Image 1 (cartoon, rainbow, N blue to C red):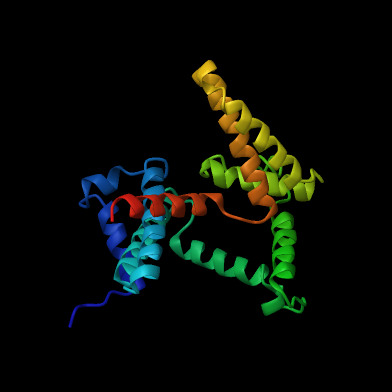
Image 2: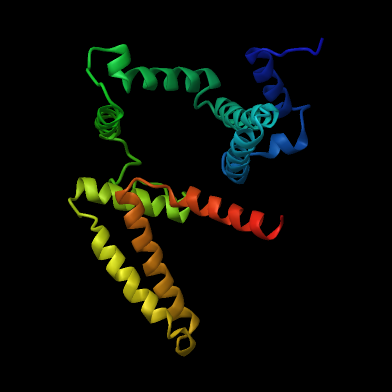
Length: 233
């Protein structure tokens, strides 16, 4: 039978790769240098979920989950070498967070629907961030590294909730119609003007999506896949 490795053996392998006699590439890596790897592996995991939904074959999903776990393990090993924290600390902290943020499961807080669960989650999350040095403002706390469509929807949704900046679907639709009319004159515009109009339209689309809790990143990706299927049958 194929050997099955334990969690402890896996972490020993990671430590060996980073050791003096380990892999030259692995030894060179830092938290910063691994950033592109984490992004790539996260997207490959999303692809694996899509493949699994279509094919029912879970092998690729299992493999890509392992690749994401590898990134977590590498960052944790580097942090251990830096004297910051260990993989065990990471596991313990996330376990504690799940208990803390689910008082309706592990405590005595009542929640009978997902909306109430999300409200409790946000309230607890807000308290957790109080006094943290890296937290600036609620909107700037949304990572710049997110894909633009994802970040835009999150910013607009949070602004609507925290600052009472009511997201009007009607206003956004009107703005979209006006900008669509402006685009009919695109031959008279330079690239900068056209980019500005398209950006305004994207912003209004994201406002509508935020109001309806829709993921434009995912729906646009699905639309592109539909287009590929249509022309490459």
